[in-house]
Image 1 (tube, one colour):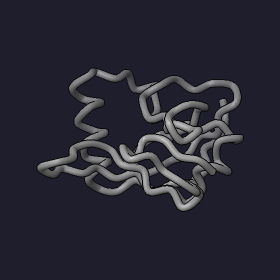
Image 2 (image 1 turned 90 degrees about the vertical axis):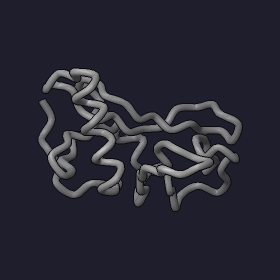
Image 3 (image 1 turned 30 degrees about the vertical axis):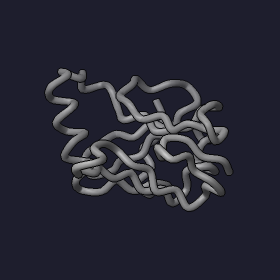
Length: 115
């Protein structure tokens, strides 16, 4: 198993952490799962964000963030370094948002980007 790294390349706001804890509880996510954060090819701007609960995989780095195990493939950190995950609760928009300083462009929905 990988060592846990205490300095994380991303930040998660308190409101996002609250929602993640709610989802974990409601979905009965097993304790061995962590929060997977990453990118994948696709989306209208080139890359899409990955955010979900998953088991540790061989290529993962493990971070500890406010009581959460965060799993991220090492190769994804160059796209996500400095990113903030937030939760918005508004009249027109509700959900997780990704504030990524590495994104050259983002799509209108904010779930994909180019770098």
